[in-house]
Length: 483
Ligand SMILES: Cc1cc2nc3c(=O)[nH]c(=O)nc-3n(C[C@H](O)[C@H](O)[C@H](O)COP(=O)(O)OP(=O)(O)OC[C@H]3O[C@@H](n4cnc5c(N)ncnc54)[C@H](O)[C@@H]3O)c2cc1C
Image (cartoon, rainbow, N blue to C red):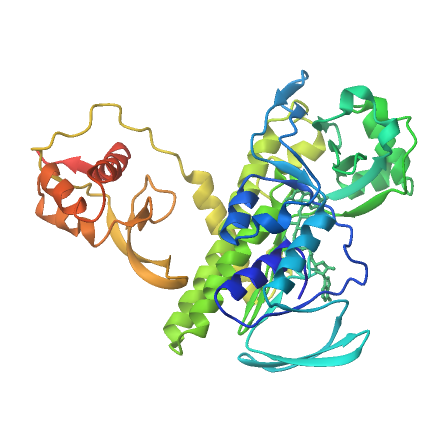
């Protein structure tokens, strides 16, 4: 359900894996307008993986717009972007939907869900379309309907309000670049759009706006532009169309995994828009969710189902925790970090949930907090600078290396596979450069020479790659010479 990037990515991937897919989109207006147009480079890799490049060729976009950024210091800097793009999201989503249709996905649009009955593996969905009531049977239901009302907030409240300028009104200095500026009460983002309009958006705490300029969002936006350095020229200009607004508070939804029923994209989690990576993360998570579904579909074993659930939940928590920490650190860098908006966001979000939520929400919240603390305490190791080990030296794993079993993706399914755990690793490591490290490196328990290990590894990969992998482990202190 939902033909945004998350739902479309899942539909296209499931179709590649030979599932029969039905996609239900509510919007009667199509292509429907949508924000979230600045795409990070990783979207391109996902599009390649879905074999969808051709379908997107005609989508209007502006590639490699540089960003003028006023963030850490009063003086703006120009940041170049080699692989990012600002797309027309309506056209982007519409092109992917058209591709899904052409590849055999059954699309119901416009259609609105009226009833869900049955159970995991045998759902019945009823929905209303202009042609009347429809019913389909489904093994899985994927909810990709966008922002979820039931969630754990991962940061203080944030709202977005934006307006557009007509092509003819864009000040000369703003054309053909994106601008981002930290101001006292939030941050401003502005960009040229592929259809030549210019959009300016303010992200701030809705409570501040309510307190300082209640009921006058447009005046509030203009006041913030006027107090800025990069957007002053916009403060007095006429706006093309009315001001629009939405919530932008980052969150994690409570119940993204229910048996046979999963949430994807913004339905499962929302990230702070400062990174402009919501679309990429939504699509990436859909690919991971498909792996979980594929695993459940291919086995009756309860333990594998549990593994799939664990994999899904871990990816969800990791995505939110990593992004929260990144945002917190990025917000801490601003030139105006002494102001309340920035102070509140530069520290971990307070633990207020315990007062309100039920047991399963607590478990999710605790897992999120644990991951957050783990990432916060993790320090990248200093890489060894000495020359790599010599071939005659006997080698072994460092004493701090533990071998554990971790959920890994193999043949598009989740499987338990041996992985290395070490304080210098952010998370357990099973594969390096797509090569399984274990059981190949189990031989290290016999303390062989480097030459012997290279000999074994080079039976299944190039000697250069084998050397590179061992050097990678050695530089991080996972591998050592015996003395
Ligand atoms: C202010 C702001 C700025 C952002 N800027 C960026 C950015 O620059 N770059 C970026 O990558 N991300 C950005 N994001 C995030 C990005 O917009 C989202 O992460 C992304 O759109 C999520 O995709 P999705 O498919 O989960 O949801 P959506 O894109 O919201 O798609 C959901 C779809 O479900 C449909 N739907 C809703 N209800 C139903 C229903 N009942 N039945 C059937 N269909 C339904 C909707 O019509 C819609 O088509 C921004 C977010 C905000 C809030």
